[in-house]
Image (spheres, rainbow, N blue to C red):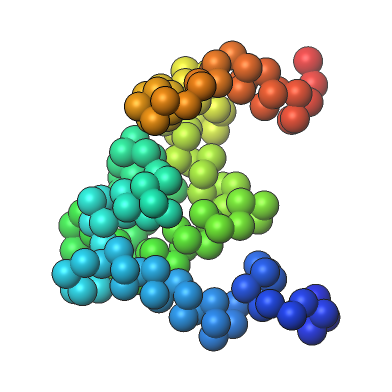
Length: 154
């Protein structure tokens, strides 16, 4: 709470949920929910963050593996579901966020991320980089950086 008093912009404080946070999230939800039925489908979510998400990751989110939706409408997430998603998306340093994204990538649900699982998601991102004429980063380089960051014990 002390951090909230020290920071002028409450939106920079990620571990505290204020009315401003609620309002920003609600506005993002409303923007994505083009028919304003208070439900978001895959096509709505793919537009999140200027199309920051890939179709493969959106499919995983809607498979409800990272978190079961509270929405009773098949193939749609409600506002509560969106709040869980956006909190995981915006603050990737929190334990719930790490668990959410880990479950998205862990295709076989065995609790271990394999090279093939990571490469599956990388392939679509590579295609996007090529379409935007960006110099692609090789998967092997990304994998090497990740291994260096986590420093696994051999």
